Length: 87
Image 1 (cartoon, rainbow, N blue to C red):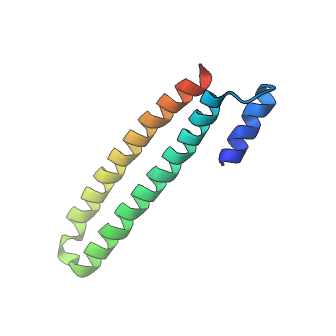
Image 2: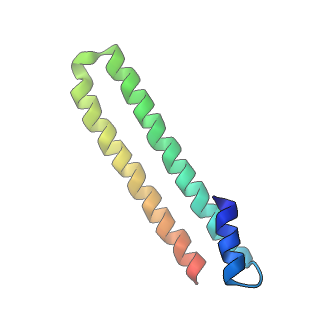
Image 3: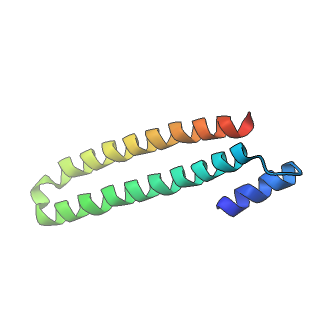
């Protein structure tokens, strides 16, 4: 994914600007971090629901809220990185 972003930068410009490379790397790190965080939330919620099936509904709601918070933070970070990439 990072390589594809860098190739797009190279095709758009004749040289790579270090700030744009850092923005591309930050974008990739943000996406991977958000995916890892949401997957860890899902894994832990399913393990807790397997241990205590009577609280599965509350855990599901908590998991959805936590995943939404992780997604919101990652989208904010992506906007910041993309703004640096455009400038």
